[in-house]
Length: 447
Image 1 (cartoon, rainbow, N blue to C red):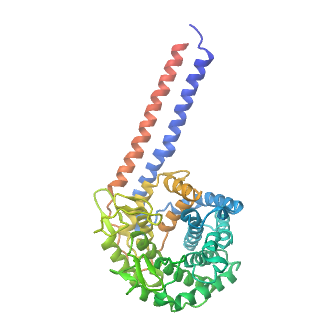
Image 2: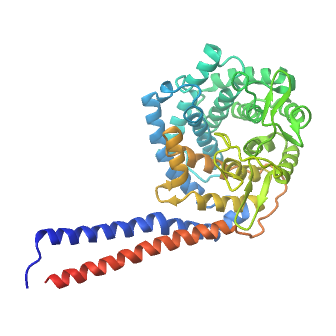
Image 3: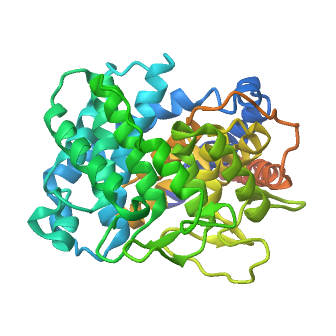
């Protein structure tokens, strides 16, 4: 019998190698996500506390990617290359660094992570450097000039306090205490004295959610520095719970800070965002706001649950960088941040199904959550920022006394994604096993 030629052997060998690669990829990108969903469905910690038992493990794995991105972001001075109108690449790095620090603080306070482990320690240090860096602030300097740390500019200064106060609680090295003290004093006085406690994020742009976060950041800074809390949280929550800021029981999405006019009614992303820290300032008002948020924006159908970006009686399909994609009436940002909002007021009946949906649709792999990674890479040249935001929302603590337990329902979307991952993975593996069997038959025939 004729010995097979070299090209025939190479062709058969390449086919065998390709089949093995496809089987490995099927396990990593299809069967692995299915296994994660199954694990979450059986996770008693998720059902009892609202947070998956895998969060510390996910956080540590994300930390290495986050540290790598942060080092590159700082070394390349990427922020200097951007125009101030580019929202995602300017805001997301600052947001992501703060989300990382706040999440690390929370998990460390529960003893779930070791902040001194190499990957986490590096990511903490680099995140704080990003937050404090004058280079990072280039886009707000373009908007506000060299006085960007002295007046208004609420969004940036809020994140400065939020991130560095978490860093100080983790590191206790006093590195940024002078900056924290100065900004805490200036910002608290400015918000306290402003009509309706409204000040601008950017010139002519005032978002109440950022002002509430700023007051929460001031309170967190007081705690980090060991100083006494002020009456500002009570004043702000009272003002935001009544005219002119409140619209049908919820703070407006955007206001005119000088006139007190509502420029945008409440939106799902804004409601979920403001509720992430509202309960730290006033648990009772936060519960009331969440009840209005649920009544006006919560949607359930046979396949999914979540928050809409616009009220249930609205027919608009408007979306922007704040809302993220709006799919089948569900706002992705409103629902993702809704996990943390529900956590903060003890609504495990919402936390658990939202978490199951978020993980299932994020395409979990051994290399991270694929969908948030792609969105972060496209929006801000970072694979880690989307993952960090999701873990931040999953780890928000309950700030209230009561809990509404999980009722046991699993959205059909979760089952659908489980069947998709399992079915696709097994199909690819079956096809490649057939190809491997053909390879050996062909090889046998050639001998």
